[in-house]
Length: 161
Image (tube, rainbow, N blue to C red; front, side, top):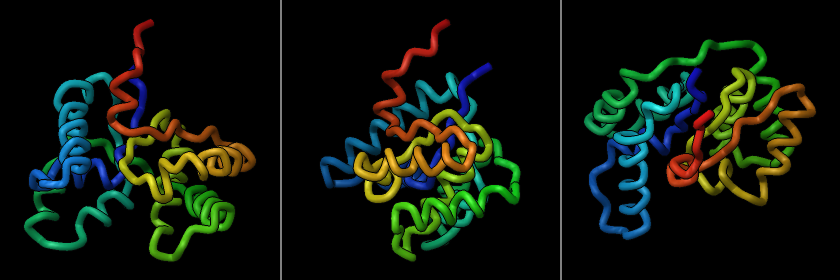
């Protein structure tokens, strides 16, 4: 069975985004595209309604481009367990109102037993200063947290058995 990976909204955004002139963003776009084209087949990629909702916002043409990447992805089932864990994460790491959806991404992945959460969001998700607290909150609630990583980090993992 392939390892599961939750694709947070920034991954879909980087796949659909026009090439950036910013060198760091352009590099991240290329790494994301490399993972998508050459490594995605090693995983069972999934998304949630939170990814769909975020990707649908903004410019309608860009939203349509993002939706094309999501067509082949499995959708996580909604459970009543996602919201309580998300609220615990929001409180536990003191997320600002504009970033509460980030807790829902983490919670959806943890509640569904997803092994990896792929993101470029270093502010509230892949933030080393928050990671320990996020993991502790998930475990205290009875869930194993996903390994939060970037495409570059995930490409370096060998799943050979």
